[in-house]
Image 1: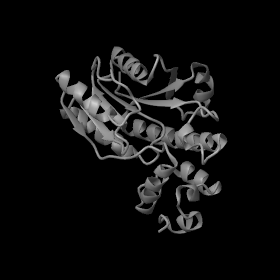
Image 2: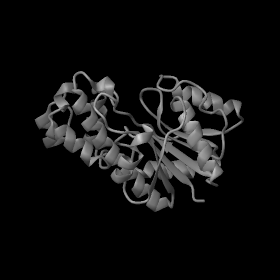
Image 3: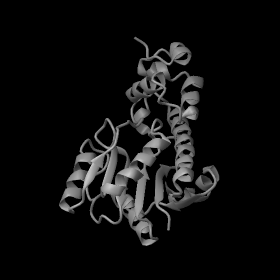
Image 4: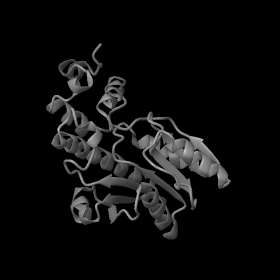
Length: 241
């Protein structure tokens, strides 16, 4: 089997996704923003998979959304339901499934990191030549992308969604005797103030892989809710002063 890239995603449903964005966003706006981010993430992931000859998996929740999410994916994705009581168990199960199918290098990524580009996926694969675990840290203490070389039982056996996620994962790797390395960092869009990081990435030309996300924010005039000047941002790409 080829190496595998697994994207974790939820069905974009109002009141079920990106709830920490509401307020100030309405549940419908938060779901629309997540849907735009998801579509960008799937497109960038598909591009990276083609470049590096990766199998593409989409792990979705709820289980009843498999058919709907299959229609949303670029060609080549295999879609399956996430399995487990929490994200820790769901990531572990997905890793186990990829290893069982013969994958040597397995990458897992979320669906709310719009500035993570296809090149970062290539960097992760190269990092796994010399290390057992690689990760691209987020500003909130987690990671948008993690790569593993083979099985790592127990590496995700800790709470997810905390500011200690990266630290706990690296501690688990050490206990398992696995070598690890960190890639360049990034950010998730979880709270309205996180939009400032996306604005900065846009200004620096590092948001080329998320046109749908930017278009949604522009079209719905959502930048100012994070204290950013929407017209100026669209014209110049610079956060408001």
